[in-house]
Image (cartoon, rainbow, N blue to C red; front, side, top):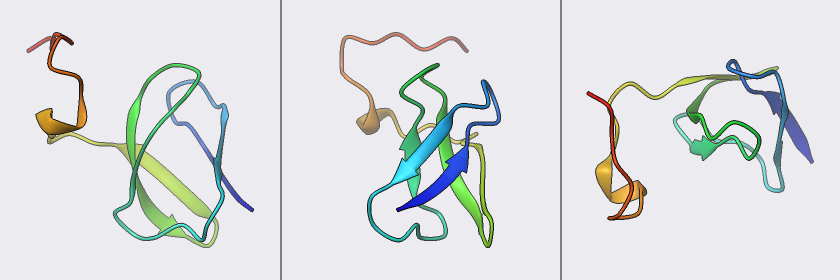
Length: 63
């Protein structure tokens, strides 16, 4: 299992399969929407172009 760290809250982000560049994940602790920007070690950064299909229709966005 691979592990990265959330840049927002520093929680572990576990990858059951091998992490892939550009892969998008959500931190289960703080809810930050992140993507993989480095593989060795795994480095995560915030996703700045939010894909609205990723979220539930009832969820609101702050612009």
